[in-house]
Amino acid sequence: MPGRWFHHAWAAPLACGVLAVALVATAMVASIRPEGWSLTALPRVDAATPMGAAARARDPLFHTVHPGAYDGQFYWGIAVDPIATGDVHESFDTASYRYGHPLYGWLGWLFSAGQARAAPDALAAIGLVSMLLAGIAAGLLGRAGGGRGWAGLFVALNPGLLYAASHDLAEPLCALLLLGGLLAYRRGNRAAAVACFVLLPLAKEPLVVVAVALAAWGLARRQTNIREALLLCATTLPAAAWWLAMRIHLGAWFFKGEHTAFSSPLEGWRRAILDAGVFSYSPDPTRAQLGETNLIVVVALGGLLLVMGLAALRLRTRFDAVFLPQLALIACLAPAATVNQRDLLRVTSIVVALTPFVLTAGGSGEGWRSLATRRAR
Image 1 (cartoon, rainbow, N blue to C red):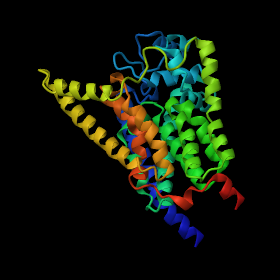
Image 2 (tube, helix red, strand yellow; image 1 turned 30 degrees about the horizontal axis):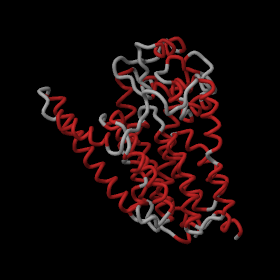
Image 3 (cartoon, rainbow, N blue to C red; image 1 turned 30 degrees about the vertical axis):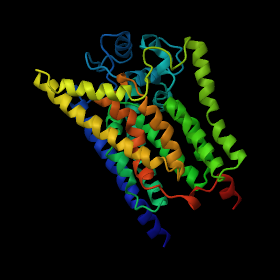
Image 4 (cartoon, rainbow, N blue to C red; image 1 turned 90 degrees about the vertical axis):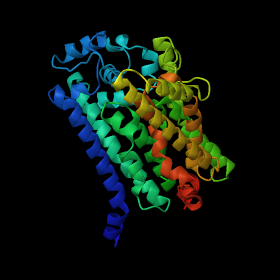
């Protein structure tokens, strides 16, 4: 009987995780094939910058690009200069911003054993493992809420997560920590839940509100005691200490400078829709097609988030409490984060992964008893 239960309970979640890995691997193969099958092509390090020179100095066969550089290069930079004491961080566009979310780069440094030539391989492997485990965690969360375990498809078939995983970006790791933390919290696994919530803000700064939202919801519904709420809130302290250290070391807070991702509410979304409409009539056929496609993506994604937001207003479960602050931040995205389709898909990918839990309430009541209550039993 235990064997049958394991097989039945894990079948769909495992299938979702394996599918996620297969799709990311397919995208990676398509990306590296023209570049001699080298994983150094995935971070897209700019050949025309000092960072490109630093990459080639560490590995003469490193595949840099120009144009076409993207944010994966900064995670590679952190993987070879983890605490901003070397020379690589000096070539970052805004080092204080990039080191505000260093966890993915740190893991690249850790699993490459500090060897710069192995950093691209380590980053790619972390992305694949993150997608596998995030898909499984989402599936298990779905089963815990009464589903059949296919909620992991919102990870495996998530365009933003697939793009990020195949370009050495941090969103898959964020999804894993968020879904894994929620799963551990639901099951009453204090150590695993706390570990995930401690690491979350170091993966992406806005996720610092997750543990606080869980604590607030639990207190409001009297399903969390004061001690547990304080523990959840305390998980934000390591990230705060790191941000303070980087403020002292680099001379600026991570939210200052040209990479501020927020503006007045809905301004970025308005700009994305209007620009896409204008581009759709460009005399350049390629640009016109991109504008048409981008317009539909922005409108469809905005519609999905609106429906999710209305559903989350019920505040029936902790999923709703976690989702609403993230939605508020997404509503305030600046045009720099919405006009470009890949950026918009990336920054919304984490909340899209929460879709099945928000829209179906994700289970409530018994499964969300406080950690203290569950531990006492």
